Image 1 (cartoon, one colour):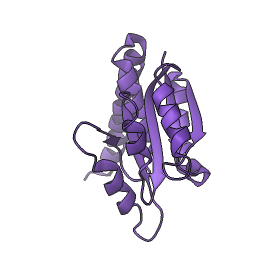
Image 2 (cartoon, rainbow, N blue to C red):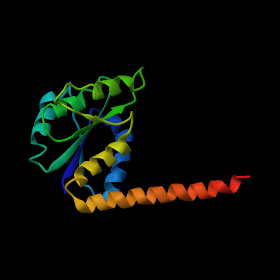
Image 3 (cartoon, rainbow, N blue to C red):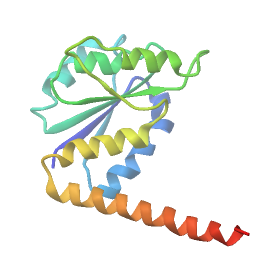
Length: 163
């Protein structure tokens, strides 16, 4: 199975990003975590992005706040799918990071999840990997079915309040 690269612009993003790790564990997806800055370590970030496919990665997740150029910098240097997680920080509460992540030029796409949406980034990475992995696709389908069953149980329990 291909690996997922999880790149943070700062180690202060870890409390948000680590929510993705449980999803990877649930589905047995190997991942690596790194800290690179689009502004402070641009050469290292570029080198990682350019070598990611050769190193066995299938998806790159980039988490960054404020200016949030990290996902775009990675997307500019690889054709692997890049998922951006805008991090809530600064005076704009993550809106700046969201807009910086989602507003990419044509031909350099970044899939963008919600502000602090690390779990959905992990699920999206799993779905991308599942395109070529039938076993993972089956696990995702089973997980969705289980989640639906749990909601229906809660609905049945709520019905006891009906008059």
